[in-house]
Structures are given as C-alpha cells and as structure tokens.
Image (cartoon, rainbow, N blue to C red; front, side):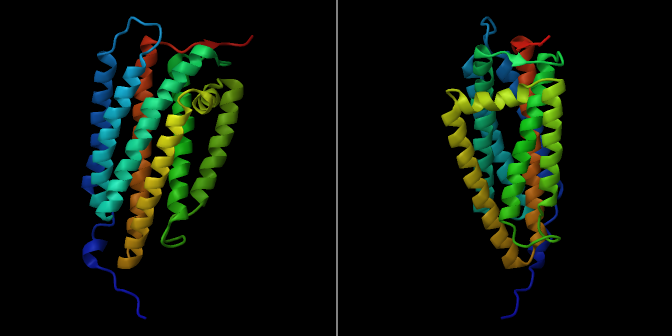
Length: 268
C-alpha cells in the first residue's frame, strides 16, 4: 500500500509560529500578575503563609494553563482533543505545584529546618528548589514525548537530551546539597511524606495520563499526515510551558518567603 501523501495545509502549521509563542509569553505575563495579586490580598499577620493562598494560586494558574496550553498546542496543528488534553494535563501540574507542592514545603518546614550549609537566603533556597524540580518535570515530559514518538531520531525526539539532562542535573544536585543547601532534597521528602502527598500523587498521575494521551493522539496525526516535525514542535511547546510555570513558581515563592522566610539551620 502506498504511503499517504503529506497534506500541505497541515505541513504549513508544523513550525512554532507567532501565535504559540504569544500564548507562552501571555501565560507568563498573566500568571505573574495573577500571583502578585494573590500574594498581596493575603492576611500577613500569621507566622506562616495561609494554605488558602496556595489553593488560590493553584486554581488561578490551572485556569491559565488550561487556556494557554490548549490554544498554543492547537495552533501548532494537533487535534482539538489532544490540545484539550495538553491543557488539562498542565492544569493538573499547576494544582500539584502551586497548590499542594507549595503547601507541603511550608508545612514540612514547620516540622523540620532546612539544612543550609552555604548560608543561602530563603530566596536562594527557593531558586535551588525550583531549578532542581524543574529539571525533573522537563525530564518527565521529554520521556513521555520520546516514549510515544511517531518516528525515531533524527525525525523524532531522542533520548540523548534526556540522558544529558539527568546527568547534569544529578551532578548539580549533589554538588549543591554538599556545598550549599539540601533544600531541594528536603522539599521532595516533604512532598512525599506530608499530608499533601495524596493530592500531589493524584494530580501528577492525572497530568501524566492526560499528557501521554495528548502525545499519543498527536503522534497518530503526525503519522497520518506525514508531518513528524509537528510532533517535535509540540514537544518543545510542552517543554516551554513547563519552564514558564516553573519560573512562575519561583517568582511566586520568592514573594512568599519575602513575607514568611523559610526556617533553616547552618551546620557548624
């Protein structure tokens, strides 16, 4: 059976154009403004940030994610169902990160001080946590993209970038924990052992399932119309949104720790 010819109308939409980029930048800008408002309207009289603030941040960012990710991926050329699945998956990620994850950090820090070998500020520890966890999210999304790719490299995404990311991230995490702070490792422990663990697990499971379904639908579309490049473009759009939401998470928690610093101890 002869292979299906590529459709020119679909091929013309495989590259990331202006519209997806505008949605990515729009999500960053609108998210930053929304999070600033969420922090400013909170009652600052308590010794710890209110959990309602993290719940509000999670809800607001999930709505932004649903709209922006759905629109950006659809404009790249994926089926509407896949675009909605991408949006819903990233909405679940936002709830996990901004709602449950941030709550777990501060609740865990109430029970246990963060080991701060390098004497970092609370803001510095937030940046360390954000970068380390961000690498894990990028690795997870790229792994899903590789697992469901419609074609092997060089047409489809490969494992080499993922392996390089894991090696660099692992070395950086070890060096940081030894010379600066164990904040990233302790955050992961807080998230896996605190009362929020069920919410985080459910949200991330939903996110992984939806993103996998979206990649699978996109792969089938790419094979059907002969545009594997569309799949690669969608993978990079997904990575871009992962980075956007991690930057927003860092900015959000920098504002939070400016009012409610993390408890840490510097070993002598």
